[in-house]
Amino acid sequence: MINRNLAKILAKRYIILASLLFIAALGLVLLPEYKKNEHVTAEDLLAKVVNPERYITSDVLADKIVTKDPSILLIDLRTPKEYEAYTLQGAMNIPFDKILEPDFEGYLNQDQYDIVLFSNGNFKADQAWLLLTRKNYKNLHVLNGGINGWYNTILNPPKPTENMPNEAFERYNFRMAAASYFGVGNNTGESAVADEPEARKVVIPVMKKKKRKPEGGC
Amino acid sequence: MGPLIPNGILTDEWNIIIAVLIGLAFGFILEASGFSSSRKLAGVFYGYDFAVLKVFFTAAVVSVIGLYYMDYLGWIDMGMLYVHPTYVWAAIVGGAIMGVGFVAGGFCPGTSLCAVAIGKLDAWVYVFGILIGVFIFSEAYTVFEDLYNGSFLGYITLMDNFDIPAKWIILGVTAMALIAFFVSDIVRKRIKKVFY
Image (cartoon, rainbow over all chains, first blue to last red; front, side, top):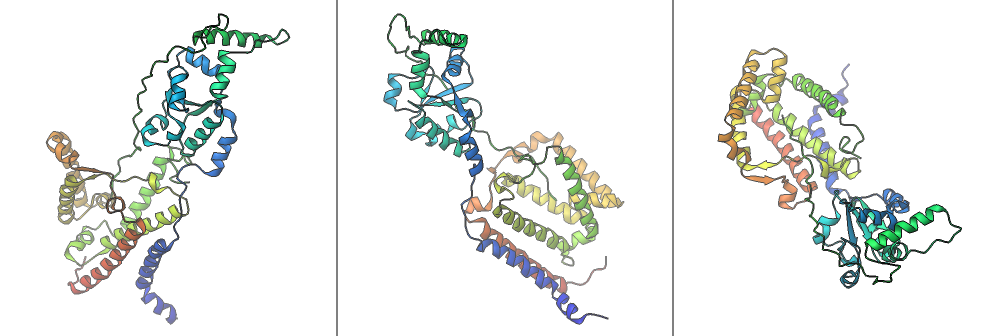
């Protein structure tokens, strides 16, 4: 027994399929616009913000500078005037207001250096860190305490009292040694300004293009 | 989420496994649709069979619509997909050679392998010819180098080049495909039937 109604419908199957295809394409046009989140999802960003791993202590940084670690790139976020007055050895100046300018993207958006952001305190550097992390830049760190913390720990470390553990004395000795490396003789009372930092030549890393593999067709 | 392998949801080793599975399915569909018959393929040029046009055009339209819906739902990142680079003159010359080979031999490279699998002698000759062509091209690469690497326009797409949103292009291509199917049906009805 032939189902006549079904046969009637099936006779028009190509028309039906064609209209389905067209409706699907039309649906794509009619879908509401939405702003795509191209970089970091809210959950990822929150997890990164809560994570204190981005902080690098001034002791670790001092050690890296003294040993001339080539993998770090120091970014001074303060104004050029403050940068001229004093900065860390080898730091380059990208004022906070300009971190999103395309001129500096080559320095910030790369995967060859560990970038250490610092400002006077933590606040500006954390803000910059957040903005750049939101753009999904990699290898960003923040100097904990900023320049003020640097001064209080490395250049002018508090002298440990006698009841402190041995590590405190070792740390103090390291800081004193580091301070004299940076040109500060705490004992002799020399000027607290380090030698004029040499303008570090930073090679702008070449932006890598997305890998594209050859493919065939047909 | 997607693409699965570049985003690390599947490991790189799956690449080849998935390629084999899709290849098997592709070959099966080609053979099942009768694409290993060179008469069916050449039918597009003579106007008595438009199955090739319909199948490949439908496949392209279905996949582009599906991909853009998946992109909308966040299942795949269209920006990470491969875009074929455009070398204008190489594409024109290569396309012309391919077209001549298509109508003269009755296979495209993919279907010729299908036909080899079912034991067609002309397909063996065809594939052997492809290998000779590959050999000549490789040996005389310096002669063809300018053409091969010249007139490079980059990884351009219609939407970037004409600054039209993808959805309108998709709608246009879909309409174009449906019109092509409709017209090809009219043409087929007017052409004398060929038995093959």
